[in-house]
Every structure is written in structure tokens, then in C-alpha cells.
Image (cartoon, rainbow, N blue to C red):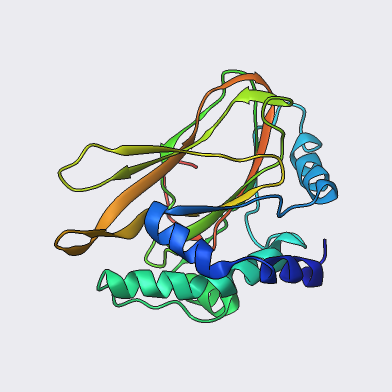
Length: 232
């Protein structure tokens, strides 16, 4: 799937409805956005790298076509990110192009790529986390599933939690099938309560894989600081 095909597929989506989903839930699913051939090629990148490898990070530039896809998605998500910041009275605004945003990252010392492919086997899991280190943090990120639930693996659900002030955390299971892409909140989003909008905190995780092998992809629009400690 080249950039023109990917752009055409994105143009066919109901972005007004996707924006409403992001506002109300903190995530939105794009079913079957990645074709089977694309999914196979991406999955092969991690399975061919090393028989025992679990993660493959793209430290600098993403390979084609991932870089082009990220650019196309950023252009459509930047208006949502700016509206969220405005709603939360956050001064920062995101430029119209990903190139300009990444230039701001580099000027702030954020040059460590965070996008990655991963492979989880039986008993593997990814704990609840956020990727919000640095001054420039884009409030949305992409998660894609490259294996078929129930066939290639069991368990391994994409889980999100949302912490609202003075309330218990709200757990959410994001339903994904092979080739599905989810847009999820990176760390915070606005929530409308009885007294107006306030900030809620979100994390995401992958539950324990009970059988088989789960291959997935995460694409982030901002880079991590050079001096970030503690590994990934």
C-alpha cells in the first residue's frame, strides 16, 4: 500500500465520527486499515530480525512506508491535538506538518525514536505505561495489530485505563483484529464533567498472552529525550 493508496483509504473514513470517538472514549478504531500483504510484510520485519527478539525500535527515521503513513495520519490528527490543548488551556500548539513538529523535537533534544514493532509470546505482557517524556509530546499515538486474535494468539488484549479525579480508574478493552489500527490517547485528554472540562490521565497495556504469538506495531509522533534513563 503506497502513500496514495493509504491517503485514499484515510479519505474514505468518517473523520468527524472518529473525532467524536476520541473525545468521548480516548480511542478510535480504524477496522481493516492495513491490508493483508502490508500486515505480513510488517510482521516479517520483527520475526526475521532475531529468532528470540521481542522488540524492534526504529531509532531514527522510520522505513518507508511507515514514515509516509505517519505523516498522513499526523496531518489529520493535529487539529484534534490542538483542540484538546485549547480545551485544557494548554498554550502549546502543534504545527500543520510532522516535519516541523519533529524539528521542534530535535531542537529540544528529543531525537530518540519511539515507534516500534514487537512480538509477544506465551506469558509475555506489556505493563501499563505512557510515552510522554519530553517537552514536546503529541497527545495521540497509533497502535496496530498484525496477528489474528483467537487464531494466532489467545489473550493479549489492548487495555487502557483512564483515571478521573476522585473516581476509580476506568478500564477499557480496545477490540482489535488483524490489520486494525487504533488511535489512542498518549497520556492525557480532556473530559467534560459537570463543572466543565478537566484533564484525565490515561495509560495502555497488553494483557498476558495465553497462547500463540502476538505481533503488533506502535507509531508515535514525538521522539524521546536523548538523556532519558531507565531503558525502554
